[in-house]
Image (cartoon, rainbow, N blue to C red; front, side):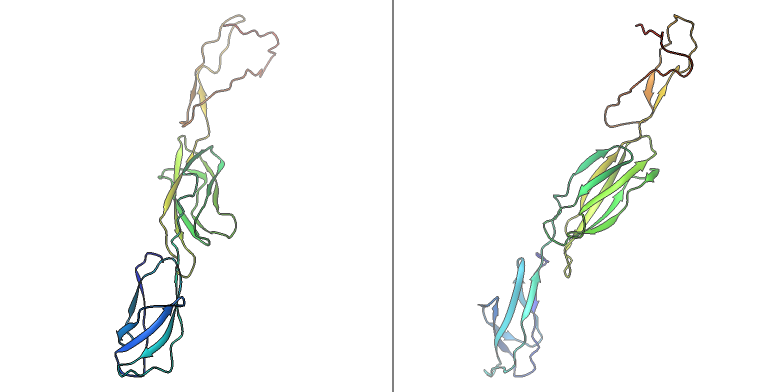
Length: 239
C-alpha cells in the first residue's frame, strides 16, 4: 500500500564468487548499480509512490568480474492506493419513524469494499432494526438503505461506522468514518377532558392537548369535530 514503507528485492545467485555487482532498470530506466551484493540479501528500493514498477536485471558480475550467463526474470511491484471515503454523505440525517434512511457510499478508489457496523446506544425496541453489512464498489448500488422503525417515545440516534478497504491483493485499509441517522418517534398525544356532557348552550371545559412523545422538530396538532351520535347540523362555535 502507498506509504507502507520501503520496498525491497532479493536475488538468489548460485554461481560465481561474492560480492556481486548488479545492473538493472526500473520501468526501462537505468538505475545506479548495486555493488557489494551478497546472494539472498534484501536490497532496499526505497519508498515507492503510487503505481506499478518493473525491475529488470540486465547484468550480474561476481568478485572476479565474471558475468552471469543466466539472469532472473523481472520483479514487478504494485503500489496500491488507500481508499478515502470521506465524501460519503450525508453526514447526518433525520427521518420519520418507519421510513428508509440512505447513505451514499463514495470512494476515490474503484473496487473499494465498504464494511459497516452500527450503534444505537442501547435500550431501543426495534420493529425494523438497523444492520451491519458489506458492499463492494462497482457491484450493485453503493449505498446503505434500511427501513428503520422503533417503539420508543424519544428520538433514536443510530451511528454507522464505515470502514473501507481497497481491492485485492493488498486490501489497503482506509480511515473509518461515522454517519448518523436520527429516527423520530411516532407522534402520540393525550387530551384532557376528552369526554364531556353539556346542556344546550353551555360551554365546553377547556381541553388540553399534550404530546406524549419527544421530537426534534416542532410539533403541530390537527383537530376535528366528528359526530359519533346525533347530528352536528345545528352546532355553532362561539369564542
